[in-house]
Length: 373
Image (tube, rainbow, N blue to C red):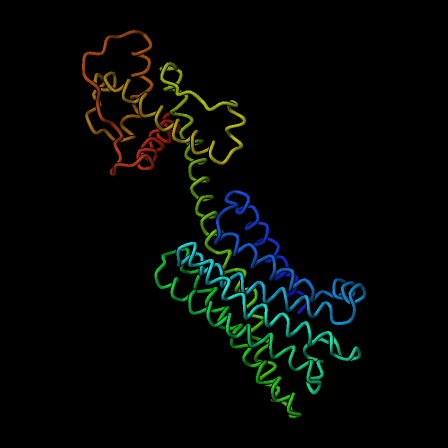
């Protein structure tokens, strides 16, 4: 259980840091504000379960303060999730009105659980849920009121999330389905707890299966919720990283070809961005710019030397291997000032119209050059 708590805490921390960073880039985005507030409140609620923080809060503010704060933050997190959907699906004015309306049950529930906490006898106030004395009316009201709001909010957001998931595409749809499943699980877990609390309030003993089922649902749902919210962004970053790695690898693979052509036609070199080679090399977008520049320079160089390739018997549409076999000789003739008597050829052509396909053909020329060196 401790390992799961620390894993969940780590996921919360990463998710919160990521959303806070995104919010700094778009501070007026209402939906991003709502998601960030949701994660911050959820992380705050989760953190109150750690013994050091719980003891500090109860010592400073009185018995039951940690439990009250945890529940208030959890309610606020779920409310923030509700407002996220409102700002996503409606115009700004309508979303603001609906958000205010949805705040009414939140405020009422917060007042009820606050009053219940204050009026609860000190000896039974703030006990963990598993040890709570549900025969005390204030304790039962505290948990039932909070859980009823959570059942409503989680069920509503799960339904809205599933609706968006059906309309979305990857990678967003995967994250949305994960989030919808976690929200539905949390709604079910809280519904089980409401039943348990009602039985306990009436003096009965709830079946252990209810408590175990709710605990298991929470154990699965909380990490899945954080992962679902973070999945689209993480998947996009991973995809971008794969492209970055591919461009970096291709950039390096083109070096043998580029060196030959750059030495022969230095005037065709494209200008670099301000800051120089090293600054460009360490920046993410700098790798992409270097890749595009090298591909263009290599292709321009091949076009310039292609008349000399033609004089060596290379035909239009020649393969990368045929180009590589005669390239050094052709460049030597060009450097010696030998007149070119034929027009430019289209050599090492890609099978599709894209710069990546062109890069693959140029890499094949570069590889063949290395083998023939």
